[in-house]
Amino acid sequence: MSDLNKNKINTPNLTSLSKETIDGDIATLNFGPTHPATHGIFQNIMKVDGDKILSSEQTVGYIHRAFEKLAERRPYNQITPITDRLNYCSSPINNMGWEMTVEKLIGAEIPKRVDYMRVIIMELSRIADHLVCNSVIGVDTGALSGFMYVFQEREKIYDIFEEVCGARLTTNIGRIGGFERDFSKGFHDKLKAFLANFPKAFEEFDSLLSRNRIFIDRTRDAGPIGAKRALEYGFTGPNLRAAGVDYDVRAMNPYSSYQDFDFIIPVGVKGDTYDRFMVRQEEIRQSLRIINQAYKNLPEGSYFAQNIPEFYLPPKEDVYNKMESLIYHFKIVMGEIPVPVGEVYHSVEGGNGELGFHLVSDGGRTPYRLQFRRPCFIYYQGYPEMITGQTISEAVLTLSSLNVIAGELDA
Amino acid sequence: MSDFIFSHETVLERISNKFEGLIISSDISYNILTIEVKTSMTYELIKWLKDDSVLNLSFLTLIGGIHYPENKGKELGITYHVHGLESNYRLRIRTFVPIENPIVDSIVDIYVGANWLERETFDFFGIEFKGHPNLCRILNEDDMDYFPMRKEYHLEDATREDKDDRYFGR
Image (cartoon, rainbow over all chains, first blue to last red):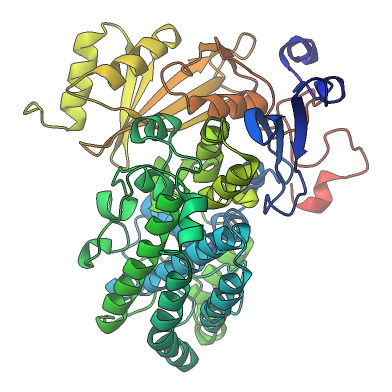
């Protein structure tokens, strides 16, 4: 087998670096892997003529952690922490996407209250994700104060997550079947305070950038991509919508009762950095609308699915006093629960696009095969085409506005 | 658009009318139709699905590999998910290749976004995509001499002999 590969593996041609450097007018610029402007570990080797990029080559995989292989050895509830580390700017969406995939496989009946609770958490994390992306675009154009300002608000979102699950960044939030506990009083207080104060802070941030002449001049026509090309590349999420295609998994295949909420899907025209920025800004407002609707109409009822005792940990008192609960507790903790045989594809609208889970189960305690559809990995391919002919500063902005998250890129 | 009604039956019928003998088997699992097709015709099928004005399954969602060591002669599977963004219909296409000669046609010239997905599948399963412009490893290091997602490779370093499986519950 090793012979088979030897001929096939083409190493990227890095040796050309030294030869052509400053030979004539064309220079080779090694941008990354650890560079302050890449906001993550990925390398771009660019051929530049002065400030113009002629071509570029990407190297990815610096933080590859073999999640798909790890998942083949873990029981279903132990895979949730792996998904945290995909897009770590919006871990709860990944967690809940995975939980919903398993629930689809095992046929759990999810109460309406759980759906609404999930929607609140997922939209909060979408806001956090988009805030990071948009404020970093501000940083890359030279406006550092906006970044500091909204990061304070992002902290408050993390405080809310902390009230729900005890963790902030890698949340491992929720359980297969619902939540481990109902929303606490601290959660309600913090969410109410956030909903009251955030819009004002956000609009102030918006007024700093969105109609700012310098900002518009910097971001207009930086890294544009047309709708047709974006679709061929497999773009999804805000980056596709900025190109003018209104594909949103929340509207197309509503999961977790998204059909109950009223929201619009903003689209851009040219698919450039400014459009991506504006689409994300508007999505933050729409997320706030959804949270307000979900919180106002939060139904009464159970915070976990009742029909899957073999997957949802029983309450502690029952474990000590009831035989079945003790058995279920033991089996769940040891991961000895067989699951149905089948093949599931479930996708959610992640911070960066369609986050899919393709799960093949052979009935054993672990997945036979689990593949993540990682939106970053798929749309980052389009990056060289978007920056060819642009300047280096525009390439930096394009990279930030695509919101490539290294954890999701490399899995 | 035509008045074609999307259902698993109608889609299956339309595909099997167009390509005779293409579909080896079909299965509906959790509301997505999976068709197993002949390896030699995968390229034409995906191209036709994209160009056909009725089905118009023109968005490539995912390409992935899967390994069934017991499935002699067709150990390695390649799974394509395609999606019609107008009809909101998803279709899963799967084809199997033998592990000694795992070659399938690349679809990069149909979907430019297939490039990295095929490289990833090559990287982890060793499936070769004929006609791929730059088929090399993408996430793993270049001098790796095995394909880590195949079932014979365990999570730990396979060359270690100091670990006894009995102490790890295996």
